[in-house]
Image (cartoon, rainbow over all chains, first blue to last red; front, side, top):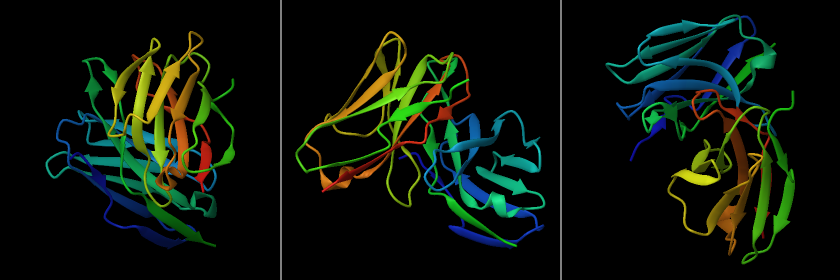
Length: 116
Length: 112
């Protein structure tokens, strides 16, 4: 079935380093991708998104790269801080019924630990 | 501006019982989706409601049912609870014509 998977289940970095979290997806029909951050006891929090007609999008300290050829997504976090420690999920979706979006398919998640 | 509100935050049920979880969407949102998140896993889509009807459904048995009310709030009902139903249940709201999803903090269900 459709799935979105992550290459690394855990990532440990030092404060100030740049972090890269990777994600592979299998549904070539997906046209919208989202990265979420989930802290303990909380729901997923939106970080950044990208549509399939783009290959890069930048936010504040975060960049998402999309490679549709190999169906790969990555999240880059610059100058990682202890507050960035959390579980990061990629998710994909596609337009359901033409103009609106339906279910999100999530990957397993990567645990990011930032050491002071 | 209130985000997505879910209740209760935690509850414990016995196998075979029934449970109802509630969700109030973010102000202005008209669509509600429910997800099940087992420990150490990513959320799994259960179903989505819009205009009080189930619009999409994931791979979950009929024991899982839902409802959306005219004020856009929603309920998730699970019958004949199994131990494997123990999970964090997340509600996400959105606009039917939009792509932004806002998640609540979830309801932690433990089945004993």
